[in-house]
Amino acid sequence: MNRSNATYVKVAQHAVGGADDLLVTLGLGSCVAIMLHDADARVGGMAHVLLPEPALSRDRSNESKFASTAVPLLVQEMARRGARPGRLKARLVGGAAMFQTLMVPGSLNMGERNIRASREALHKAGIPILGEEVGGDYGRSVRFAIGPGTTIVSSVGRSDVAL
View (tube, one colour):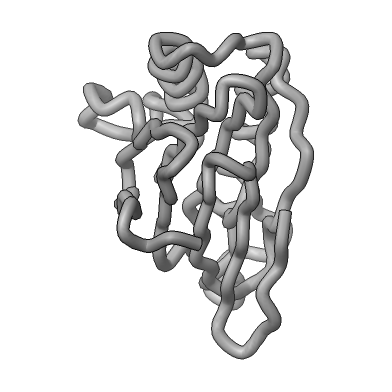
């Protein structure tokens, strides 16, 4: 994957790119990376969502921060670059339970809430999920090569996973 055209997507940020671009996010814990891709237009986008919905934050101005608002934002920005909503496919990465031992048994951790909210936002937008590497108790980093639509997930002490 060509690192010269790499864009790093930090927490509560998003990016959209074209065929020669690589979108990268590092250190996903309970956050979820949502990748959208239109193979025909060779346009892709990534959002690094921190929370499931705006109601969980005092500052609700950043749409990239929430699963429920990041998906429509990506769809809109990708459409401006020639993507068609009906052709979009998604991949999800992250949503780990990083501090599960500190939680009350039976409670829903933030990682799981982010996964559920991401799936719900994609379902609402009519976007099918092609692959997921979610849950668990370990962090992940993602490299999304837009042209070929390949997503590589890396974790310390684990083999890379291609989605």
